[in-house]
Image (cartoon, rainbow, N blue to C red; front, side, top):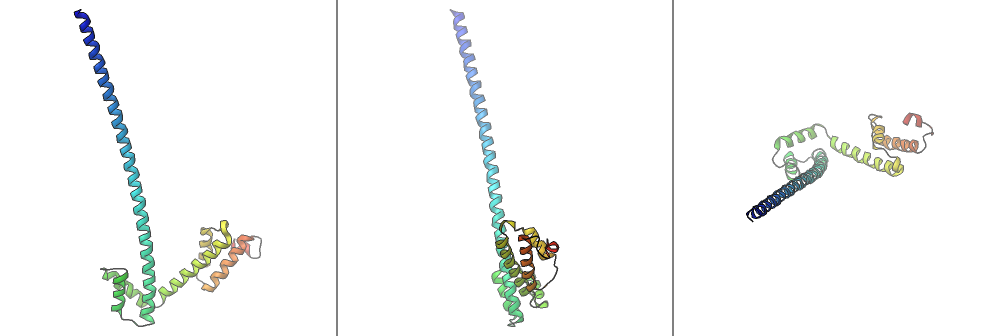
Length: 187
C-alpha cells in the first residue's frame, strides 16, 4: 500500500513537472512569437514613417523650389522693369520664402541685380522644354524615352527656343519613321 502511494505521488509529480515544462515551453514559444510580431510591426512602422517622411519632404522641397523660382522671376521683373526698391524685394522674400535668412536673401538679390532677365529667360526656357516634352510624350506614347528626349535637347548645345520645337518635331518624326530623311543623324 505504501509503495502504491509513493508510485502515485511520483507519477503525479512527474505529470505535474511535465505539464509545467510544457506550459513553460509554450509560454516561451508564445513570447518568441510575440517578440517576432512586435519586431515585424516595428520594422513596418519605421518603413511607413520613412516613406511618409520622404514624400512629405520631397513634395515640400518641390513646392518650395517652385515658389522660389516664381518669386525670383517676379523679383527679376520688379527690380529691372518696375524699378522696385530692394527693401520691398526683401519683404517679398521674407514673406514667401526665407523668414530669417537675410544672408541668403542678400545673395539672391545681388545675383538677380547683376544679371537682369536671367531668371525670366530661365523660366521661359523651362516652360518651353516642358511644353515640347508633353508634345513628344503625346505624339510618341509608349515609344517616348525621357533619356532620349534629354539627349536630344542637350546634344544641340545652346540654341534659340524657336529651334527647340523644330528639333523635337524632327526627333518625333524620326522616332515614328526611322528611315526618313535626316533621321540617321538624329537617331
